[in-house]
Each structure stands twice: as structure tokens, then as C-alpha cells.
Length: 232
Picture 1 (cartoon, rainbow, N blue to C red):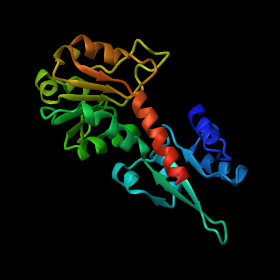
Picture 2 (picture 1 turned 90 degrees about the vertical axis):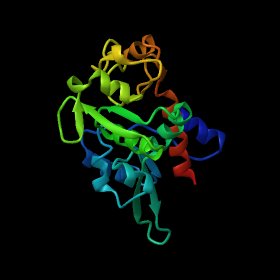
Picture 3 (picture 1 turned 180 degrees about the vertical axis):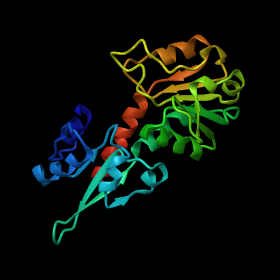
Picture 4 (picture 1 turned 60 degrees about the vertical axis):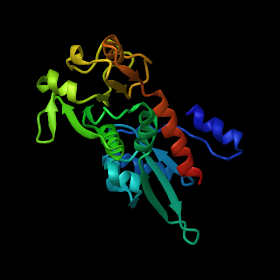
């Protein structure tokens, strides 16, 4: 919140970024009634996929992901009719954050979790030429379970990304249940969690010599992208 409000002040924009706590996705529509001049919204879990049903249009970034974390409100100058357009800044932010760390040996990735953030990560990695496999607690045709992860699978997938909230403060003693002993210095382990800065997932991967990164840069990059969407 401070980032956006400081940007508004610095650029002399008459705007305020505030937080809305909602109990269900339908409550979003009440926000527009209460704040008729609202120009945009960020959307957080667990509503990144549900929100799509309430939107009028999707940007290419959101279409490719199937989840939305930024809404821009476009008003018709003649009748002030609102058009709600969905974007996905998570995908762009993650792609720009991880790209400098990827080398030619990293051709496959395991994405831990299957929520809205995981879809953004999958799309970003695919755009970088990486084959992606999901890992979840529940078995499906498109996912592996944590129990199915073998030494060979870890060896083949040199990128491992945690998109689950496990390890987020205050639950710092938790982490995804993967066989960390098979991780090597050739791996890149990226955790979307940024609080704490060193999660148990990152600690375990670091102990195996892997390159690691937390989600702070992604958080900042997606904020920059959100601001750009709203103000351009």
C-alpha cells in the first residue's frame, strides 16, 4: 500500500490506494457503488480466478494465464459506463525476475501448487521455453503428487518453484514436502513467499547447494506493472 501511495504523491496524482477485505467475490461489485471514482484494483488469492466472471474483457496477459490480479476500470466519456478489464502482472513480474537466472541446462520445471499464482508461473516459464509440470497434494491427469517425486524427476527438473503459501510468516517451520536431498547445485529453487526472506523451502534448497530466490523482487515488479496499467 505504501508503495502506491508514495508513487501517487511523488507524481502528484490525486489518488489513494486502500485495502478492501471481502467475504466473497460478489462483494467486489459493492466496492464500485461505494467508490464511484475507483480506477482500478489488485486481486489477491483466493479470488484471482473467480473474478474473471465479473469482468468485461481480458488483456492478453490474463488470457494466457487464466487468472487476474489487476483490474483496470475504463469509463466511457459520454455516459460514464464502466468496462472492467483484467490483467495478470504476476506473470510478467515472475518472468522478468527469473529469466536472468536460467541457463541452457534448465529445460524443465516443477511448479509446486495449483492456485492462481501457479498458472502465472507456468505461463511465464513456457514463454521462456521451459516445460512445466505441476505438483499437488491431490492427484489429477495434469499433476504429480508430492509422494510421486523421485530422484530422477528432481534430477530432470532443474527449476523448482513454490507457489504455495507454505512457509509464510508466522508458519515459518513449514515447507512443501519434496525430497530436498535430491536437489543439487545445478538447481534453481524459487519461492514466491517473501516473508520471511529465507523460508524453510529456501533453506533446505540452499543446504543442497542450489541457487535460490524469494518472491520479493516479483512482488515489487508486479506492483510496478500494476501502476503502469492504471496510469497509462
